[in-house]
Structure formats: C-alpha cells, structure tokens
Length: 490
Image 1 (cartoon, rainbow, N blue to C red):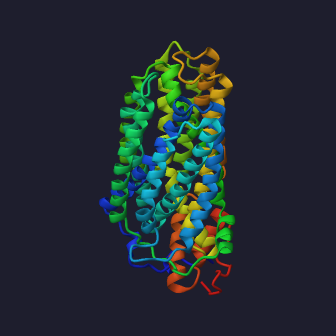
Image 2 (cartoon, rainbow, N blue to C red):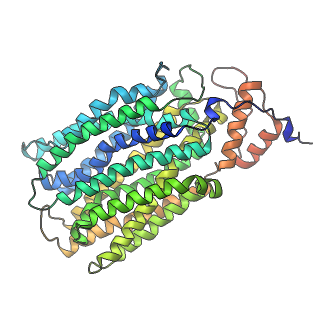
Image 3 (cartoon, rainbow, N blue to C red):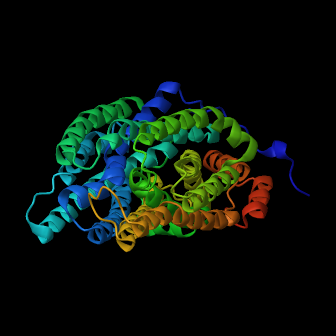
C-alpha cells in the first residue's frame, strides 16, 4: 500500500521560495534590455547595413550571418563551461560577468557598423571579425545572465515573471529602434551617419541598463559550490529529455523568428511601401508586450507553460500564411498578418525562458548535478543555431528574389522573395516547432513535484515513496536510483 501524502515532510519557506520583490524582477528585465541594445540592433539592421551601406552582396551577407551565428552557438557552449567553472563571489556566481563583460560587448557592436571601404574581400574579413567578436562577448554576458533566472527563484510563477520582464526589456528596445531608427533608413539618406549616431547612444544606454541589472538582481537558490566537470555537465544535459525537446523546438522557432525579424524592414519598406507603419508596429508591439506581462501569470496558472508555448507558435503559423498570401495592393492585410506573427513571437518568448529554467531542476533530479550554466548554454546554442539559420534564410531569400540594394522600386520577383521569407518560411518552421512540443513531458505540476523531491533529498537524505512513484509514472524516469557524481548518497 502506498504511503499517505502526509508522510512527506514539510519545510519552512527558504529564500528561493519566497516571492521576488518587484525591483528584482524589473532589474532583471533591464539586463535583457541591455542585451538587446546589441542583439536586436544587429538582427534588425546589420543585413541592411551590409547591403545598402557597406556594399556587401546579399548572398555574401546571408552566408556571413549564418557562419558567424553558428560560431556564436559554439561560443555559448564555451561560455557555459566558463560559467559553471566560476567561483561564487561576494557578488554571486553570475553577476560579475555582467559587470565586466558589458563594455567589450557594446564596443564591438559599435564596430560592427563601421565597415571600412577596403574592397569586397577586406570588408568581408572586417565584418566577420567584428561580428564574431561581438558574438563571443555577447555569449560571455548573456549565458550568465540567462542562467541567473534559475538561481534567483524556484517558484514557477516568479520564473514566469522574470521571463516576462525579459520580454518587456527586449520589446522596449525593439520598439525604440522601430519608432526612432527604422523610419530614417530611406533611400538617399546618410545611413552611415545614422548608424554611427545610433550605436554611440546605444553604448551609453546599454551600459546604464547593465548596471541596473547588476545592482538589483540577487542569486537566492542554494546549491553546491563544488565545480562541475565537463563529463557531469554533458551527462546532465544528455539525460534531460525536456531540455532536448525544448532545444529542438527552439531551433525551429528561432529560425522562423529571425527570418521574420531580419526581413521585416524590407517587407514594410519595399513590399507594403508604407514606412509610416514602422512606429505603428513598434507601438503595437509595446502595448501587446505589457498586456501579456499583465495576464501571463494567470494564463500560466490556468493553462500551463507548455500549452501556451504551442498556442503562441500557432499564431505565428496563422500570421505567416497571411503575410505570404496577402496581395501587394492591400498593405493592411499584410500588416495584420505581420502583427499576428509578432504577437505569437512576443508571447512565446515570455514562456520559453521559464520552460528552460524548469529543466535545470529536472537535470538535478535526474542526475544529481545542478549546472545552470551548461544547461542554459546548450539551450542558447540551439537558439543561436536557429538564429543563424534564420539570418541565412533572410539573406538568401533576398538574393534568390533578385533584391537590388538601394533601388527605389524592387521587381515583382524580388518582392515575392521578401514575402515568402517573411511569411511562408516562418509559418512552416513554427508549425514544426509546435509539433515537437507535443512530446514535451515537463508540465508545471511535474516540475513542482520535482522541486519538492530535491528539497526532501537535501533535508532527509531519502526519497519519499509517494513522490517517487508519482514522478516515475508521469515522466517515465526513475530519479532515485543513481549515485550523484560526488559519490554521496542522496
């Protein structure tokens, strides 16, 4: 006969389970705003800069985005190992990376928009070096930043708040760029001067936001301070089924998102021929983001993160098909499709990082190893692969359509290439991402049970039978019969 649930011991609420104060949530969001000063600026404008300012061909620029972002993906894995090997300082384990890595990152973002006129080969060498350098610096800041969410709280609702704060920070930056920068990028304008000014301002704002994050975020989850070996980290990742499925889905979804995000400017400017829609779209994104932040905790409690992730991916499918099928003569229809797609992207990004944070506890429950850095690094690795594929698709889509840089009017074939890249490609990739998540086993209830068992292991050194049987039945895994890497009994 099963033991009654009352046999599971209770515990006082520790710091990791207390509600996060609003200022820590807001400060964490400021960190992703700072990240996106570099990241979103490059994803939105670097292809335009390379083609219309530097004079690099669209095909070469697309290949550059693919190659460098794949390099970035491996840089994430390297950064994850650096983070896991780092010691816990008086500032915590993750915050020092934010303090000391921010300036190199922001400077390299500025240099990426300063390609010298030294011939096609020389410009490509410079572009590869500066963008790859920025990617490495970004990994050494973003991996510890993303890992920090799992170290700030173990409360599912608060993790949703942190994920929402990330999206708010990123969207504020995206809205500012769309409102104040995109309308300036017209044919005949001094684009080099515009980008130089924008990036200088970005350095100042980005550094200030990083400092806000550094001084407000706190790491509250107690964990072993012993270093985790590469073998243990890889084992923890390899046996983490929810993480592996989330990684595969994220590759597909990020490919869709980056293809859309990179070609969005071309779609509004050249296909819809309505540059006045840039600030409108930015305002809509901003309003939708705050609306999602307000309702997301209640949506998570009612439907769960997995269900919401799949529903939001479905919105991208619907919006992408509208963008692809909308006739050029009715820009309002295409714009509505674009808004629906971006709605799905924004909402999806609110929950995806909360899902990733949950897989940290699953890995610890499964193997006895807690490695926030490596788990976030491999998750970010797959997202960077998706970004690489999406960026490559954007450049190649323009090239295959016959896009002519700086032309006042593109050919019908070029417009069709832009429309397909902004609509059909994201729709298909998002549908595949949705299908993958059907097999994702880590529901919110399963995660809560896993956190309970980890606590009981640490406090009592034994595994409660009721909880063990329930978790084995729900996930198909047996957590209690492995020996942790340190050889101890848990």
